[in-house]
Image (cartoon, rainbow, N blue to C red; front, side, top):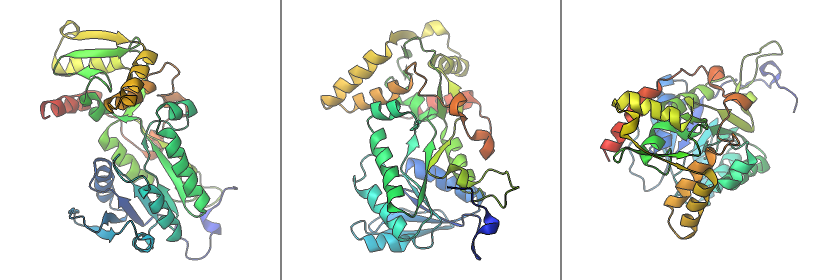
Length: 332
C-alpha cells in the first residue's frame, strides 16, 4: 500500500484517535494501560466488561457491559470507538478473542491491539517453540481477513519485576533460597520491560497522529505500525547482569548465593516433559528458557531495534525495579 497523508483524506477525517475501548481494564495488563491513558488525558476511555461484572472503574472511564454470546451486544458496545485494546488472562474462553475482533470489524473500529503483549513474534522459531506463538499469528491473520481493522502487536519481552520475582523457572532466581540457575553461562542478553514502561508505551503509541500531515511530514505516526509490531524495552540484560543488580540492591556477596548452570536445550526439554505430564509449571519453564537460547531470538535491541526513542520513553534504573521484585517476593 502506498503512503497515505492526512491532507488527502475525505472531509471530516480526524488524524488522531479520540475513543479507546479496553477489554480487561482491571486485569494486570489492562490496568497498566488504563492508568497511563488516563494520565495522558488524550482519549475518552471505555471499559468493556461482562454483564455480570461488578468491577469498579476509575473516574472518567465509561463502562459498556456486554454478553459475549450475543454478537450484537459486542458490536453495539464498540460503535464509534477508534481503537480496541484486548487484554485477557490465560483462562479466558478460547473463542473470546475472535468474538471481539469480529465485533470490532462489524463496528468499523479501525485499530485493534490484539491480546499479544510479550516476546518478539517476528522470530518464527521462537513463536513455534513457545507454543502460543502460532495462535497469536492466527489471531492477527483473522483481523486482517475480516477486512476492516488494522492490528498492532505489542512486543515488550517478559515483564522484568514480575519475572524476576516469580521463581527459578523464569529468570532463574529464588530469593528465599538465595539461589540462581544460570541458563548456559548466564551471559545471553534479552529485552525485558517493566510494567510502568509498558503502560507508558501504550499511551504514547495511541496518542500518535494516524497519518503524516503531508509528504513533507517525517514525524512517526500510527500508520508506521499498521499490521506490524511496536517494540518496547526497559533493559537489555543477561541473567548475570540481573544478578549484579540483585547484589547491589541486597548488599549480598556473590558467594552468599548458590549457583548452578543448566543447558538451554535440556532445561527447555525438561519443561516440555513436565507440561506433557500435566504440570503446567513446566510450560512456564520452557517459555522463559526459550528466550535465553543463544540464537538471539530473545533480543530485538539491535535488529530490528526498539521503538523507545520514537515513543519518547524514559530510561529506567534497573536497581529500582530489582528492589520492587524483591519486595514482591516478601509479600507472597
